[in-house]
Image 1 (cartoon, protein in one colour):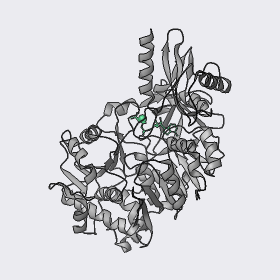
Image 2 (cartoon, helix red, strand yellow):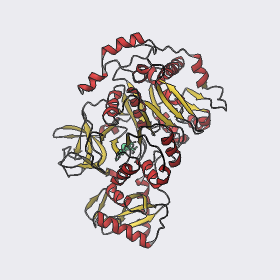
Image 3 (tube, helix red, strand yellow):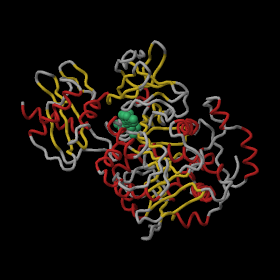
Length: 560
Ligand code: ATP
Ligand code: MG
């Protein structure tokens, strides 16, 4: 391995393997010696002016960081970790906003060969300590603004030995390592840890949509698969300005950050939370040409259509992940964003987007698309492990040597084991998500296995009903759950957030029911509709159907 700016060595190293050849041959084996931090940043640090990060703060100020600066700064961070006694494989977690130091810590941790994880800022002390304690994290990187919250979490996270704090003005506690000064004092030369494809690199927790979040371990080789997704799905080109709105607290944030840099694209990030007006201004002001976000954000932009009026968009691609993207939102995107929003599907476990819509493919709006070349994914019967024919519903399943596939749930061998089923053609990993494929191999999402509604002998996927609801002008957002019923087993109940200007009434309820009945079928329409100002969501903005399902159950019980 080479130090950051020992470029002569880097040229020699480059001859050892060529990523272009690896992808041309669709040979997913990453080189034996591989360090993600080094690979995605130092390679582009040959050109002093090439920008890695454009960061806009909540005050609207723009900060830029070149690959050159990021290479230096991350090496300094790695030196600081090493001086603190952080060894290869130790866990380093962040809890901080989308500021440049966050990205420095990510790359520096990887260069040290330590394992990077991150907790989204919307979690409070319990959410933080649950994760830190679960994986015995050694270091937390945070900011002075977040320091009190971290302090509360540390009581229940005894493994943490050091807190590295970015001083944003208020001064860090005396025992902390102060990010800015510690890095300034450290050398910019760093002998990157000699990690290989099979060494631990990332530990990200799932969203906790269905229960307690699970720690998902990925190895250094993960970057080889992620880079492929960025190439074929995101179609990332050098020189692109890529805004992936996902926070580093989720694997998607790490995928899109490290994947973007792998190809030398510039990453755009905004410190603030989602706000339709703010986002429209940013899209207007900066030449962002690739946008990667979540359905909730697109839905809310659609609701606030006026904010996009007069906005000068430079988009070449827009993509979505995390929840199903309805055909209606895709149609809206064509009209208002001028691009087809490409839906992508993945899990923290699959490590990247494995079933996607590609810019090169004929699209079927509402479909998740097709498996990424090189990935073996199919629809499998979760009980027998058999691959199901087109039209039949089963679980989305994956197998093979794809480098992004997770190594294990941290410290939970039994849980890891439970995800696999043996079938006639071998073993499959089961995602817990239900879908079917059509005759042409397009995948159609139906819902999480836990969310499926059994009503009068029918299996009803909530997504189809929600999509249909979403096409009614009075519906801004909806969530569909089973409500226990004495004769039918369950009925379909919909929680609906009305659009701006729509007033809930008996007539409106009937009109919405009829709309779904006509569009879908008489057995799928929601027999009950309840209007709500908002829906319960995870911190990533995913609808928490389990919570609504509990409410519907209690309601049914109280009425019986
Ligand atoms: P937990 O596993 O803790 O309950 P989670 O499954 O929401 O939380 P993630 O790994 O962040 O945690 O999310 C992956 C899940 O998100 C998928 O299993 C799927 O249910 C959903 N998902 C992701 N992308 C899509 C998509 N394009 N369409 C439909 N669902 C999607
Ligand atoms: Mg999950």
